[in-house]
Length: 190
Image (tube, rainbow, N blue to C red; front, side):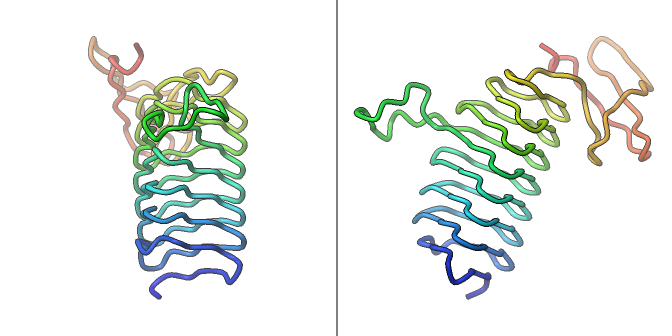
């Protein structure tokens, strides 16, 4: 086995990347795909056909349901829940009701957030703890609240951007205290 599995974890998938660690009481269903060097915390549930990239950290008690795709370098805080059905009923369940959700490279999702299905969370976006995400989040977007609203933008390093270097009709370029410049497209603000 090229990955670590705690003895209490249930791993039904055969598609787990090298260097990944799956901890206490986690359950990874058949046909789930987990990349290299991931950390799957205690009590995490990963449903069938979920796709997870490389270097993803999923904290304790997260539920990732079918229809969710998570790209590389994503952080998911404790007790985050992803949904996959906009009109759930216990007496009506068919696979075609699943609405896909995409979490793009480098995004961070704060503890106890709920991600309503059908959204795309942009590259390096940051979601504050306890948020309810009901709409797409632009790259580098900082959102929080219920419902989560765009409150600004963050750098790769996670710090909120405030110093504007350049602005025109198409973009804003921010300078982060860490030294990086981040380009925000004005089309993302719509």
